[in-house]
Length: 471
Image 1 (cartoon, rainbow, N blue to C red):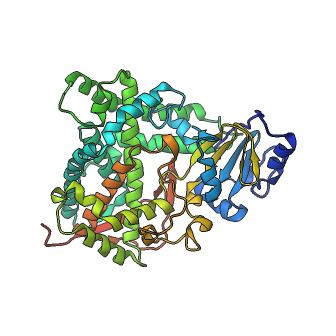
Image 2 (cartoon, rainbow, N blue to C red; image 1 turned 60 degrees about the vertical axis):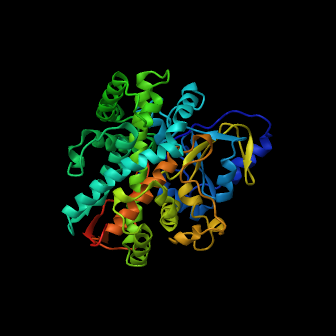
Image 3 (cartoon, rainbow, N blue to C red; image 1 turned 180 degrees about the vertical axis):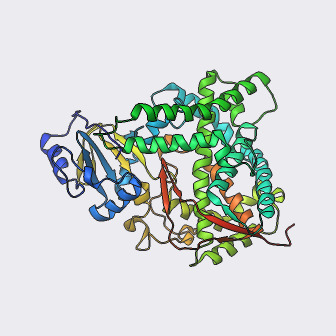
């Protein structure tokens, strides 16, 4: 459980109302005096466990461990209330707070009160407009074409999709955003110091805030030392890249890094942004593509989905696909949006009450931190209907009422790269479905997710058998 200290701040709420808040918000069963809800925690899959508790306890409940408290919201209406910028703001706690060690002033981890955030956000706006996306499309096409050639060379052989999608999305963001390539598809993840560094930092940032408070300090120094070693493996090549680009001063460079270099930001802060995009720009999209490939290969409905996406992609090879072709793949985008609804790579986000307020009938003190569990709220039957847990891309058809959906966060701190990510995922999935017959080595209808700061499908193997008659 993420540990958050109870606020002692009172504004306009009466003690009677506050007492009502403390006694009416449900809590997990088997609460123990002093220790609180320690027995009901799950250290391996914490957010999935909390989603199960939402089904059991209702759309809002409170966790207490010793003096630490956290309110979890999985009801769509209450989640929408917590997204109000008038009464709530973003809170940097949990894994995000630990990720600050790797990128202290990155766009994702810098505090909203820090002027750096506004400077970086404004500098990056042109880097994600339509003109920029047209340039990135060409870089994506080159990497996707290389992926297709790699899979043709391994035609019909089992491929570990977890590693392959990691490599693919890193290559795309590195090429499109920073003008370099980090390696080839034949490079094993285990031999890549940068990617193993990111993996180790993700695992550390996910595990640390969920450790039992009574024993969290045991071995903490050694874990921090290992995390710092991993961070050095990540930041080292990025700092070198930033320094090289600063010295080159290429006036023709038009990528994410080129948007930051002319600013007055110090080199280490620019490096923080590069680390942020290389990390967040690959991990979440890789998770989305893994989930998408899973749903193309399920015994129930996978073949039909595969055929529809392949038909929508047409017969063009990656390098023949134009930027304007991608928005036309509407059903592919609906398919991806449904993957994000059921399996958001960022399973939730933290909000802090800016004043005494309410969530539904419950009074909430100023300073109270709430975890908006998107994983649960995006499956709320009151919002999405009785079939909310079922995979159905058609629920995103034009004209249909949509339920609560925030896979990219909320407010001014939402994901600035969401258009990039959706364009990339739509492009990749269409090409793979069109070029290959994709099959799971062990087909199943039940997806298993792992947690390491993000929510991502467990590693699985797939075969890609090339089709003919591609132009």
